Image (cartoon, rainbow, N blue to C red; front, side, top):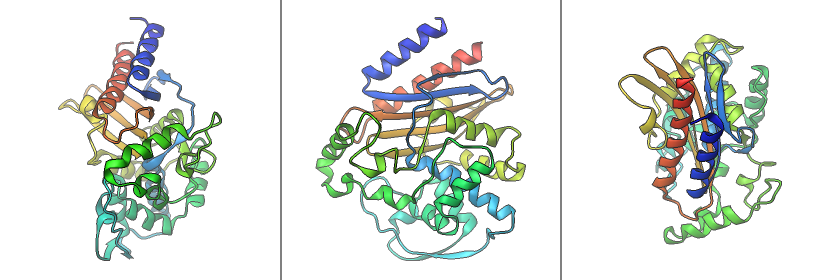
Length: 300
């Protein structure tokens, strides 16, 4: 199948599956890429924890922070489905900055992320991204705001109502009645901007090599592997990634490195048009689309 026909077919499959999808797959060695709506800006959800990890690690390298510093972190005490780690703790904990980096990036722990944002506020994270020449990602608010959506206000058996609101309350200009889904107020990025971030972490760039290595290592140990990982994990590959989930948003970014030396940066950002919280079919469809693009690039 030629490239144009392949992209048309994938668009149809994603649309039939109830997904508005923004994808980009790039060969990190040749620069060749394939995508679907890769420049559309969407709320980042937990993808913002990768820029946060980058900024925190860079400040440790500069001596502005010490990874061994112990912080007193209040418990998140969240009981709704989804949050992990300190976000579900019932009692305070003392944790080192280095370990908060692990919890925030590898477990997507929002409370750990906000402890790090307390050291490096959103505006400073954004400034460091700009310093590295990465200008397509906005960082405007902490992660705590992501736990204050309509979903937390409905009973578990009414979660579909929050998803219906997320689907129907947007505007043509990507504004939204739910602030966390409004691209003028939320942390945002596009598939292309996140692939640019991945390329800067995996290939020589303005990011210090030791900082890039540390962030790559964190992403390699991501424990949330239900979305794209099934199609990119094998004995002959390494899959390093970060997921992002919020209401009807399902995202994942990552790099697959093959034993033959090839490496591909992948970003899949999606909005579901189906008012349901649990959609394994959507996860599988995202993964299939990304792997299909990767396979096509690899054959080229």
